[in-house]
Length: 368
Image 1 (cartoon, rainbow, N blue to C red):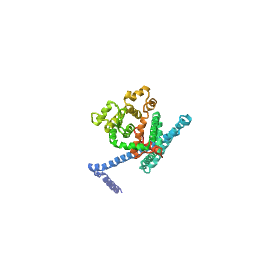
Image 2 (image 1 turned 90 degrees about the horizontal axis):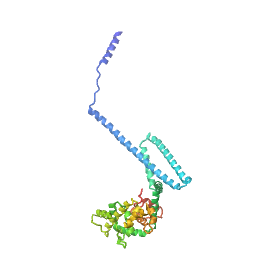
Image 3 (image 1 turned 135 degrees about the vertical axis):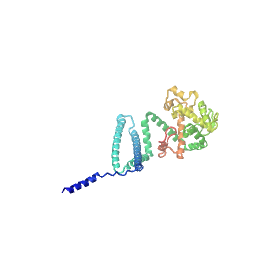
Image 4 (image 1 turned 180 degrees about the vertical axis):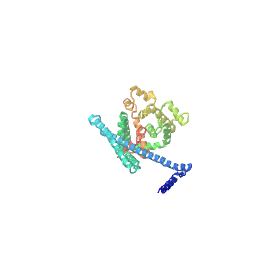
Protein backbone atom coordinates (compact mmCIF):
# COMPACT_ATOMS: atom_id res chain seq x y z
CA UNK A 1 0.00 0.00 0.00
CA UNK A 2 2.92 2.35 0.74
CA UNK A 3 4.86 1.71 -2.51
CA UNK A 4 2.57 3.54 -4.82
CA UNK A 5 2.70 6.52 -2.51
CA UNK A 6 6.51 6.43 -2.46
CA UNK A 7 6.57 6.10 -6.18
CA UNK A 8 4.29 9.11 -6.42
CA UNK A 9 6.55 11.11 -4.13
CA UNK A 10 9.62 10.29 -6.18
CA UNK A 11 7.92 11.41 -9.31
CA UNK A 12 6.98 14.64 -7.68
CA UNK A 13 10.47 15.15 -6.35
CA UNK A 14 11.85 14.51 -9.78
CA UNK A 15 9.76 17.26 -11.23
CA UNK A 16 10.77 19.63 -8.46
CA UNK A 17 14.45 18.88 -8.84
CA UNK A 18 14.53 19.46 -12.56
CA UNK A 19 16.55 22.58 -13.46
CA UNK A 20 14.42 25.55 -14.52
CA UNK A 21 14.90 26.73 -18.03
CA UNK A 22 15.74 30.37 -18.41
CA UNK A 23 13.57 32.26 -20.91
CA UNK A 24 15.37 33.43 -23.99
CA UNK A 25 16.43 36.99 -23.61
CA UNK A 26 16.02 39.33 -26.54
CA UNK A 27 19.03 41.20 -27.71
CA UNK A 28 19.62 44.75 -26.57
CA UNK A 29 19.12 46.08 -30.04
CA UNK A 30 15.77 44.29 -30.32
CA UNK A 31 14.55 45.78 -27.02
CA UNK A 32 15.57 49.25 -28.12
CA UNK A 33 13.80 48.79 -31.42
CA UNK A 34 10.59 47.84 -29.62
CA UNK A 35 10.81 50.70 -27.11
CA UNK A 36 11.39 53.60 -29.51
CA UNK A 37 8.02 53.65 -31.25
CA UNK A 38 6.25 53.82 -27.86
CA UNK A 39 7.77 57.26 -27.10
CA UNK A 40 6.71 58.87 -30.37
CA UNK A 41 2.95 58.76 -29.87
CA UNK A 42 3.38 60.22 -26.37
CA UNK A 43 5.23 63.26 -27.75
CA UNK A 44 2.72 63.66 -30.55
CA UNK A 45 -0.20 63.44 -28.14
CA UNK A 46 1.32 66.06 -25.88
CA UNK A 47 1.78 68.52 -28.74
CA UNK A 48 -1.73 67.86 -29.98
CA UNK A 49 -3.25 68.40 -26.53
CA UNK A 50 -1.21 71.56 -26.03
CA UNK A 51 -2.38 72.92 -29.38
CA UNK A 52 -6.02 72.17 -28.57
CA UNK A 53 -5.72 73.87 -25.16
CA UNK A 54 -4.13 76.96 -26.74
CA UNK A 55 -6.91 77.13 -29.36
CA UNK A 56 -9.52 76.84 -26.62
CA UNK A 57 -7.96 79.56 -24.46
CA UNK A 58 -7.46 81.97 -27.39
CA UNK A 59 -11.06 81.50 -28.51
CA UNK A 60 -12.42 82.13 -25.02
CA UNK A 61 -10.21 85.19 -24.45
CA UNK A 62 -11.27 86.80 -27.74
CA UNK A 63 -14.92 86.13 -26.94
CA UNK A 64 -14.66 87.46 -23.38
CA UNK A 65 -12.72 90.63 -24.27
CA UNK A 66 -15.09 91.49 -27.12
CA UNK A 67 -18.12 90.91 -24.90
CA UNK A 68 -16.69 93.17 -22.16
CA UNK A 69 -15.92 95.97 -24.63
CA UNK A 70 -19.41 95.74 -26.13
CA UNK A 71 -21.29 95.61 -22.83
CA UNK A 72 -19.27 98.40 -21.22
CA UNK A 73 -19.51 100.50 -24.37
CA UNK A 74 -23.29 100.24 -24.47
CA UNK A 75 -23.47 100.76 -20.71
CA UNK A 76 -21.48 103.98 -21.05
CA UNK A 77 -24.11 105.27 -23.47
CA UNK A 78 -27.09 104.12 -21.41
CA UNK A 79 -25.85 105.47 -18.07
CA UNK A 80 -23.89 108.54 -19.19
CA UNK A 81 -24.23 111.49 -16.83
CA UNK A 82 -23.16 112.65 -13.37
CA UNK A 83 -26.35 111.98 -11.39
CA UNK A 84 -25.67 109.46 -8.62
CA UNK A 85 -29.01 107.66 -8.72
CA UNK A 86 -29.63 108.19 -12.42
CA UNK A 87 -26.19 107.31 -13.81
CA UNK A 88 -23.39 106.43 -11.39
CA UNK A 89 -25.22 103.92 -9.20
CA UNK A 90 -26.90 102.06 -12.12
CA UNK A 91 -23.54 101.83 -13.88
CA UNK A 92 -21.86 100.42 -10.75
CA UNK A 93 -24.68 97.86 -10.41
CA UNK A 94 -24.17 97.01 -14.06
CA UNK A 95 -20.47 96.32 -13.45
CA UNK A 96 -21.39 94.03 -10.55
CA UNK A 97 -23.87 92.24 -12.80
CA UNK A 98 -21.17 91.85 -15.44
CA UNK A 99 -18.87 90.19 -12.91
CA UNK A 100 -21.63 87.77 -11.83
CA UNK A 101 -22.44 87.04 -15.45
CA UNK A 102 -18.78 86.25 -16.15
CA UNK A 103 -18.68 83.87 -13.18
CA UNK A 104 -21.83 82.08 -14.36
CA UNK A 105 -20.40 81.84 -17.87
CA UNK A 106 -17.17 80.29 -16.59
CA UNK A 107 -19.06 77.72 -14.50
CA UNK A 108 -21.28 76.91 -17.45
CA UNK A 109 -18.31 76.46 -19.75
CA UNK A 110 -16.55 74.23 -17.21
CA UNK A 111 -19.57 71.92 -17.01
CA UNK A 112 -19.98 71.91 -20.78
CA UNK A 113 -16.29 71.15 -21.13
CA UNK A 114 -16.57 68.09 -18.88
CA UNK A 115 -19.58 66.84 -20.84
CA UNK A 116 -17.79 67.34 -24.17
CA UNK A 117 -14.56 65.78 -22.90
CA UNK A 118 -16.41 62.59 -21.99
CA UNK A 119 -17.71 62.28 -25.56
CA UNK A 120 -15.32 63.98 -27.98
CA UNK A 121 -12.56 66.22 -26.60
CA UNK A 122 -11.96 67.70 -30.05
CA UNK A 123 -15.29 69.52 -29.79
CA UNK A 124 -13.98 71.74 -26.96
CA UNK A 125 -11.56 73.86 -29.04
CA UNK A 126 -13.89 73.72 -32.06
CA UNK A 127 -16.74 75.32 -30.11
CA UNK A 128 -14.37 77.85 -28.47
CA UNK A 129 -12.93 78.94 -31.83
CA UNK A 130 -16.46 79.06 -33.27
CA UNK A 131 -17.42 81.56 -30.55
CA UNK A 132 -14.41 83.69 -31.52
CA UNK A 133 -15.36 83.59 -35.22
CA UNK A 134 -18.92 84.65 -34.44
CA UNK A 135 -17.56 87.53 -32.36
CA UNK A 136 -15.24 88.44 -35.24
CA UNK A 137 -18.23 88.78 -37.58
CA UNK A 138 -19.91 91.04 -35.04
CA UNK A 139 -16.80 93.22 -34.78
CA UNK A 140 -17.08 93.98 -38.48
CA UNK A 141 -20.54 95.46 -37.95
CA UNK A 142 -21.17 99.17 -37.44
CA UNK A 143 -22.84 98.61 -34.06
CA UNK A 144 -19.56 97.41 -32.60
CA UNK A 145 -17.86 100.57 -33.87
CA UNK A 146 -20.21 102.69 -31.78
CA UNK A 147 -19.71 100.50 -28.71
CA UNK A 148 -15.94 100.52 -29.18
CA UNK A 149 -15.89 104.32 -29.43
CA UNK A 150 -17.91 104.64 -26.22
CA UNK A 151 -15.59 102.16 -24.49
CA UNK A 152 -12.53 104.22 -25.49
CA UNK A 153 -14.14 107.36 -24.12
CA UNK A 154 -15.04 105.54 -20.90
CA UNK A 155 -11.51 104.29 -20.31
CA UNK A 156 -9.61 107.23 -21.81
CA UNK A 157 -11.37 109.83 -19.67
CA UNK A 158 -10.68 113.52 -20.30
CA UNK A 159 -7.88 112.88 -22.80
CA UNK A 160 -10.02 110.61 -24.95
CA UNK A 161 -13.00 112.97 -24.70
CA UNK A 162 -10.83 115.80 -26.07
CA UNK A 163 -9.60 113.59 -28.89
CA UNK A 164 -13.16 112.62 -29.83
CA UNK A 165 -14.23 116.28 -29.80
CA UNK A 166 -11.39 117.26 -32.11
CA UNK A 167 -12.02 114.24 -34.33
CA UNK A 168 -15.61 115.32 -34.85
CA UNK A 169 -14.38 118.78 -35.80
CA UNK A 170 -12.35 117.08 -38.52
CA UNK A 171 -15.37 115.07 -39.68
CA UNK A 172 -17.47 118.26 -39.76
CA UNK A 173 -14.79 120.04 -41.82
CA UNK A 174 -14.68 117.12 -44.26
CA UNK A 175 -18.47 117.22 -44.56
CA UNK A 176 -18.38 120.93 -45.44
CA UNK A 177 -15.93 120.41 -48.31
CA UNK A 178 -17.38 120.34 -51.81
CA UNK A 179 -16.76 116.91 -53.30
CA UNK A 180 -15.86 118.44 -56.68
CA UNK A 181 -13.12 120.56 -55.07
CA UNK A 182 -11.75 117.59 -53.16
CA UNK A 183 -11.69 115.55 -56.35
CA UNK A 184 -9.62 118.26 -58.04
CA UNK A 185 -7.09 118.04 -55.20
CA UNK A 186 -6.92 114.28 -55.52
CA UNK A 187 -6.29 114.51 -59.25
CA UNK A 188 -3.60 117.18 -58.85
CA UNK A 189 -1.88 115.15 -56.16
CA UNK A 190 -1.23 112.20 -58.48
CA UNK A 191 1.76 113.93 -60.10
CA UNK A 192 3.44 114.34 -56.70
CA UNK A 193 2.43 111.00 -55.20
CA UNK A 194 5.80 109.19 -55.71
CA UNK A 195 7.73 112.02 -54.04
CA UNK A 196 5.31 112.22 -51.11
CA UNK A 197 5.32 108.45 -50.59
CA UNK A 198 9.13 108.40 -50.59
CA UNK A 199 9.38 111.29 -48.14
CA UNK A 200 6.71 109.82 -45.85
CA UNK A 201 8.50 106.47 -45.72
CA UNK A 202 11.89 108.08 -45.11
CA UNK A 203 10.67 109.96 -42.02
CA UNK A 204 7.96 107.60 -40.75
CA UNK A 205 5.07 109.99 -41.50
CA UNK A 206 1.65 108.85 -42.67
CA UNK A 207 1.55 109.62 -46.39
CA UNK A 208 -2.11 110.72 -46.22
CA UNK A 209 -1.16 113.16 -43.47
CA UNK A 210 1.61 114.57 -45.65
CA UNK A 211 -0.85 114.87 -48.55
CA UNK A 212 -3.18 116.82 -46.26
CA UNK A 213 -0.40 119.28 -45.42
CA UNK A 214 0.34 119.83 -49.12
CA UNK A 215 -3.35 120.34 -49.86
CA UNK A 216 -3.68 122.94 -47.09
CA UNK A 217 -0.46 124.72 -48.03
CA UNK A 218 -0.56 124.91 -51.83
CA UNK A 219 -3.61 122.95 -53.07
CA UNK A 220 -0.98 121.00 -55.07
CA UNK A 221 -0.15 124.13 -57.08
CA UNK A 222 3.54 124.70 -56.18
CA UNK A 223 4.48 128.38 -56.14
CA UNK A 224 6.45 131.00 -54.26
CA UNK A 225 4.13 133.05 -52.05
CA UNK A 226 4.44 136.63 -50.84
CA UNK A 227 5.12 135.55 -47.25
CA UNK A 228 8.19 133.56 -48.29
CA UNK A 229 6.62 130.13 -48.71
CA UNK A 230 8.36 127.95 -51.27
CA UNK A 231 7.00 125.15 -53.41
CA UNK A 232 4.58 122.31 -52.78
CA UNK A 233 4.63 122.56 -48.98
CA UNK A 234 5.24 126.32 -48.77
CA UNK A 235 8.50 125.89 -46.87
CA UNK A 236 9.70 129.04 -45.10
CA UNK A 237 12.36 129.19 -42.40
CA UNK A 238 12.99 125.80 -40.80
CA UNK A 239 15.46 124.66 -38.13
CA UNK A 240 18.96 123.81 -39.34
CA UNK A 241 18.65 120.26 -38.02
CA UNK A 242 15.67 119.74 -40.36
CA UNK A 243 17.68 120.82 -43.41
CA UNK A 244 20.50 118.52 -42.31
CA UNK A 245 18.16 115.53 -41.95
CA UNK A 246 16.51 116.17 -45.32
CA UNK A 247 19.89 116.57 -47.01
CA UNK A 248 21.07 113.31 -45.49
CA UNK A 249 18.12 111.36 -46.84
CA UNK A 250 18.28 113.07 -50.23
CA UNK A 251 22.07 112.63 -50.36
CA UNK A 252 22.60 116.23 -51.39
CA UNK A 253 24.49 119.15 -49.91
CA UNK A 254 21.41 121.37 -49.69
CA UNK A 255 17.80 120.68 -50.72
CA UNK A 256 16.35 122.68 -53.60
CA UNK A 257 12.98 123.90 -52.40
CA UNK A 258 11.70 124.42 -55.95
CA UNK A 259 12.19 120.70 -56.55
CA UNK A 260 8.92 118.96 -55.46
CA UNK A 261 10.78 115.87 -54.25
CA UNK A 262 13.24 117.92 -52.18
CA UNK A 263 10.37 120.08 -50.93
CA UNK A 264 8.47 117.00 -49.77
CA UNK A 265 11.51 115.66 -47.88
CA UNK A 266 12.02 118.99 -46.10
CA UNK A 267 8.30 119.09 -45.20
CA UNK A 268 8.36 115.53 -43.81
CA UNK A 269 11.50 116.29 -41.79
CA UNK A 270 9.94 119.53 -40.48
CA UNK A 271 6.69 117.84 -39.45
CA UNK A 272 8.57 115.05 -37.71
CA UNK A 273 10.67 117.65 -35.86
CA UNK A 274 7.63 119.53 -34.57
CA UNK A 275 5.75 116.37 -33.66
CA UNK A 276 8.71 115.31 -31.51
CA UNK A 277 8.84 118.79 -29.96
CA UNK A 278 5.13 118.55 -29.08
CA UNK A 279 5.39 115.02 -27.63
CA UNK A 280 3.66 113.50 -30.68
CA UNK A 281 0.50 115.55 -30.15
CA UNK A 282 -0.78 115.64 -33.73
CA UNK A 283 -2.77 118.87 -33.44
CA UNK A 284 0.03 120.76 -31.72
CA UNK A 285 2.60 119.34 -34.15
CA UNK A 286 0.60 120.56 -37.16
CA UNK A 287 0.03 123.93 -35.54
CA UNK A 288 3.76 124.27 -34.81
CA UNK A 289 4.51 123.37 -38.43
CA UNK A 290 2.25 126.20 -39.61
CA UNK A 291 3.53 128.80 -37.14
CA UNK A 292 7.16 127.89 -37.73
CA UNK A 293 10.09 129.04 -35.64
CA UNK A 294 9.36 132.77 -35.83
CA UNK A 295 9.09 134.55 -32.46
CA UNK A 296 10.01 131.41 -30.56
CA UNK A 297 7.40 129.23 -32.25
CA UNK A 298 4.45 127.49 -30.69
CA UNK A 299 6.39 126.31 -27.66
CA UNK A 300 7.05 129.90 -26.57
CA UNK A 301 3.37 130.81 -27.04
CA UNK A 302 2.25 127.87 -24.91
CA UNK A 303 4.72 128.70 -22.17
CA UNK A 304 3.63 132.32 -22.22
CA UNK A 305 -0.03 131.49 -21.61
CA UNK A 306 0.44 128.29 -19.60
CA UNK A 307 -1.37 126.16 -22.18
CA UNK A 308 -0.73 122.42 -22.19
CA UNK A 309 -2.69 121.10 -25.16
CA UNK A 310 -4.49 122.12 -28.34
CA UNK A 311 -7.78 122.75 -26.55
CA UNK A 312 -6.31 125.21 -24.04
CA UNK A 313 -4.14 127.04 -26.61
CA UNK A 314 -7.00 127.74 -29.04
CA UNK A 315 -8.44 130.81 -27.18
CA UNK A 316 -5.03 132.52 -27.44
CA UNK A 317 -4.73 132.02 -31.20
CA UNK A 318 -7.22 134.62 -32.38
CA UNK A 319 -4.87 136.09 -34.98
CA UNK A 320 -3.23 132.73 -35.78
CA UNK A 321 -4.61 129.85 -37.84
CA UNK A 322 -6.02 127.76 -35.01
CA UNK A 323 -8.16 125.83 -37.51
CA UNK A 324 -5.07 124.78 -39.52
CA UNK A 325 -4.78 121.27 -38.01
CA UNK A 326 -8.50 120.70 -38.62
CA UNK A 327 -8.16 121.68 -42.29
CA UNK A 328 -5.08 119.52 -42.78
CA UNK A 329 -6.71 116.47 -41.23
CA UNK A 330 -9.95 116.93 -43.18
CA UNK A 331 -7.91 116.84 -46.41
CA UNK A 332 -5.93 113.89 -45.07
CA UNK A 333 -9.17 112.07 -44.39
CA UNK A 334 -10.27 112.68 -47.98
CA UNK A 335 -7.04 111.13 -49.28
CA UNK A 336 -7.39 108.19 -46.88
CA UNK A 337 -10.95 107.54 -48.13
CA UNK A 338 -9.83 107.78 -51.75
CA UNK A 339 -7.04 105.31 -51.03
CA UNK A 340 -9.26 102.84 -49.16
CA UNK A 341 -12.58 103.20 -50.98
CA UNK A 342 -11.61 104.56 -54.39
CA UNK A 343 -14.12 107.39 -53.91
CA UNK A 344 -15.01 110.27 -51.60
CA UNK A 345 -17.86 109.16 -49.36
CA UNK A 346 -20.53 111.78 -48.56
CA UNK A 347 -20.44 111.95 -44.77
CA UNK A 348 -24.16 112.48 -44.25
CA UNK A 349 -25.44 109.69 -46.53
CA UNK A 350 -26.61 106.37 -45.10
CA UNK A 351 -24.13 104.77 -42.72
CA UNK A 352 -21.16 106.62 -44.21
CA UNK A 353 -20.49 108.51 -40.97
CA UNK A 354 -19.82 105.29 -39.06
CA UNK A 355 -17.95 103.83 -42.01
CA UNK A 356 -15.66 106.88 -42.21
CA UNK A 357 -15.06 106.80 -38.46
CA UNK A 358 -14.13 103.13 -38.76
CA UNK A 359 -11.52 103.97 -41.41
CA UNK A 360 -10.10 106.66 -39.14
CA UNK A 361 -8.33 109.99 -39.44
CA UNK A 362 -4.70 109.65 -40.58
CA UNK A 363 -2.29 110.15 -37.73
CA UNK A 364 -5.05 110.60 -35.15
CA UNK A 365 -6.69 107.22 -34.86
CA UNK A 366 -6.24 103.87 -36.50
CA UNK A 367 -8.73 101.30 -37.63
CA UNK A 368 -9.13 98.48 -35.15
